[in-house]
Length: 433
Image (cartoon, rainbow, N blue to C red; front, top):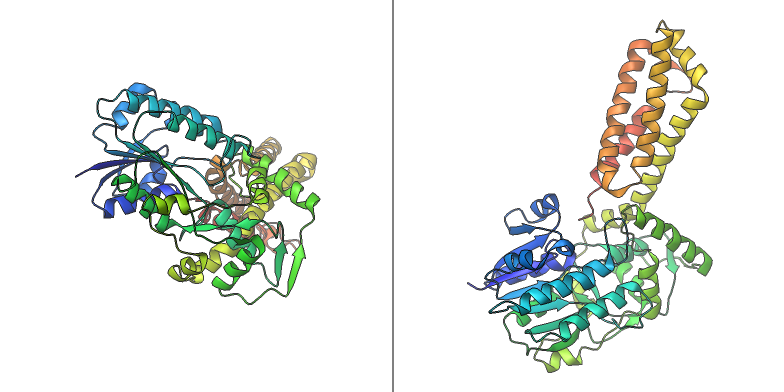
């Protein structure tokens, strides 16, 4: 049985490639840097847990042992708290190619790039991808480069998630970059192209866009997505002013530094401004099958209630994060500013003065730490769990030392319950894959 190694194996594209290669009879090994994510998304798959940006030649040779094909589906949209574009798209590719060149029987490399990559592209994503492709093209090894347009899949990350979220807004359709051309590819068609390349049914040294044949405007793509989700046509098409769009991009870029991979980051928006389009002729000329149009893609993916829930919650999730951060940080700051007043609430009910003061300081400090920690993507789950635990502690302590606060007309204890509930809902939505 031929062995295939898929880099970025639990990503949107990588996971589809792993399934398609296994169905085609390959023995498949995925490579990813998170054991927890790999185990959750494909618990029965064979995994190598490694950060490809840190592998040296010897480590790569171990990863590639006995492989007949390597699929590089690893990638990132923009530099951020968890991603380094040069490291992922260039240095890792250079080290991989060097290790393959030194192999006595190098496997075929199927490099998954992106339609529109070029050295003078408007974003770092496309430029670094182009330089990575150039490294592959300069190598004497057996390679094929596939360049998909906007990938539509049952799962939704990044731009496709934002597309669904924007299309589900009640009554309103945002008119943003309305005339930008968009072409799509169904993830199953892309995975089938990878299988075809892996089987060597596609000639070596092929560089091809993987895409539907026809483009449409971004606004028309939004309308089609809205119809697919089962929503009636929007009553209003609301223009999004350029300054507001730039502000959103700036906030998203800042969030990226905290580990959040928002599809509103400036790289994604600039890529959309430039258009997402490709030419499928090189692929069909090489013997590849034509990719289905977006209409056929949506027919193959019937929208269910889960799709509509996800689309709505996708926009609500960042609001939940902001509300939690504001609530807990403000609570802690107010506790410090009103330290004596808060202490007196406890001492008036019989608590020792020093203990009451320490409890207020500890509680206020915990509130601020949790309020800031929830803004950091890798810490959001721990922060939500901490919020729930501290909320329960507040309720227990309040019930023990100040039970009369349950009947207070301002509801200081009653209000802890919805705050804990919001943290619980946010915790349940915290997975990004």
